[in-house]
Length: 51
Image (cartoon, rainbow, N blue to C red; front, side, top):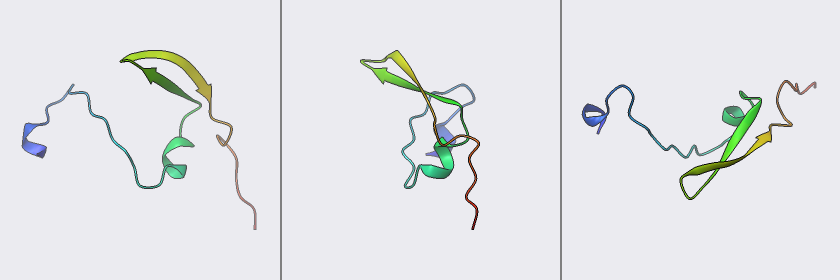
């Protein structure tokens, strides 16, 4: 599989747990029918858990 991936290829990935993935970005793009239709703010961005 990795041998067939080249720089510039578009990949779609589904992580098992998205919290540590999504909170790295200020916004996410909503894609419908192969077109970006909306942008959503990531409310969890720049938050910290204090114990």
